[in-house]
Image 1: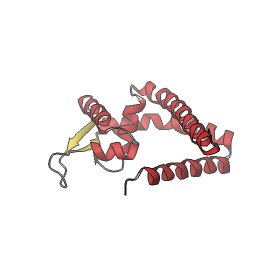
Image 2 (image 1 turned 90 degrees about the horizontal axis):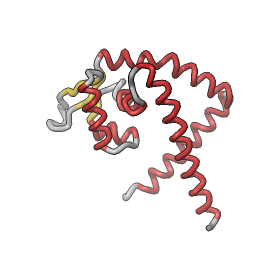
Image 3 (image 1 turned 60 degrees about the vertical axis):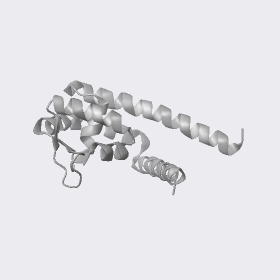
Image 4 (image 1 turned 90 degrees about the vertical axis):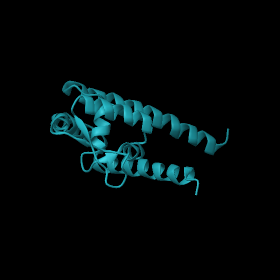
Length: 148
């Protein structure tokens, strides 16, 4: 294989491993408050503003069907609710309920403690470099996969 092929494989495998590691950490942070990492991810996407399921899927890199399933579970458990969408009659907006915001708030202290430990291990500048590298990689993949 060529060097570029080896680099792509290494980036993909490293990203898959990193995703698994982040998922493991997120599950550990969410479990004590009766949530899953996926529930936290979907609720987190709508904390600032309500979004339609398709918008959450785009923002989180998830499938629309997967987000729909989680959104319906969150609504069933009264952690989120559907609201009318003035821009689109059929695509309702998902927003957290007070109980959903409270559940997320309960995760914050453990999240902060883990963040402090991770940044302590990497150093602030090292953590910024990692973030910038991930953002550059994501932007390049978006650009290359954009059909236009």
